[in-house]
Image (cartoon, rainbow, N blue to C red; front, side, top):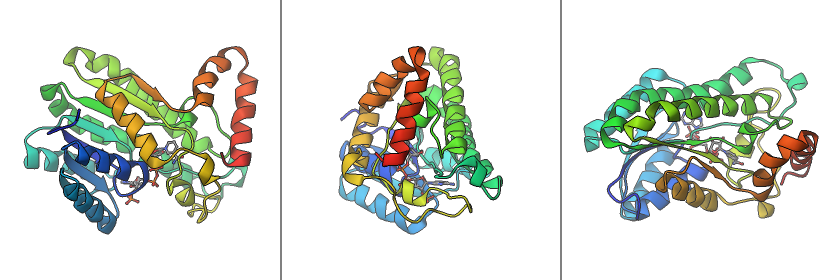
Length: 266
Ligand SMILES: NC(=O)c1ccc[n+]([C@@H]2O[C@H](COP(=O)([O-])OP(=O)(O)OC[C@H]3O[C@@H](n4cnc5c(N)ncnc54)[C@H](OP(=O)(O)O)[C@@H]3O)[C@@H](O)[C@H]2O)c1
């Protein structure tokens, strides 16, 4: 029950890993502020959280909008009087080679959601997190540690997120704020169906072998355990644990693993 009465702002709470984290936090008795764009789904998650014993407030937010991120933080403080944890989870992916991209604004959009959205929320939450010696959590990806084909813009945005959070960790250490970065491998959420294709539109189907990848529940559980323990990072799959060492001595092998993973969807 690490998050009992903990005031948690969670972006991307309307589906997938975010929804699973919301449920698990509610079961621990957290005071949740849930953010995403889809109001209907967000309200349904908030309702499910209340049914599980947590407090939950849904705040429709598009994280690419700085003013909306600021309003999200202020709404959380108005409701609960403080912020203990910020989980930057909202994100979007792509599934296309750079040469096939029809309009580069698609890649700019990924950067706005995956990097700038986290930057805005973190910046406005920081003064409050200093008061509570709180936690910042970022949901990155294995694509934040190494290159992955069909993910140029996504991988770049997640590398940016990691660079930002790793620098911030050093800045806020003396304030007692922890920064935990989670690096999921493939997770069987709806993200891949929503991944942007060459025309900038959602793919509309999930190329993953869903029975062979981690569930959103498991990913949420590992991430929250790492955040509770104030760990620097949560690396989830064996291949990414091995990969971080292999990359130092045989980076070409890591490229092959990434290529194979995309080919097989697992
Ligand atoms: N699934 C994987 O294989 C995988 C692997 C590694 C890392 N991750 C990361 O895990 C995180 C969660 O992804 P997921 O797999 O759970 O995908 P998901 O099911 O598609 O959930 C993504 C969440 O982000 C929200 N979101 C997207 N754009 C947003 C915006 N502009 N403003 C506010 N919210 C926005 C979505 O809600 P709305 O559409 O309602 O706004 C949704 O709640 C992401 O950061 C993703 O990059 C996923």
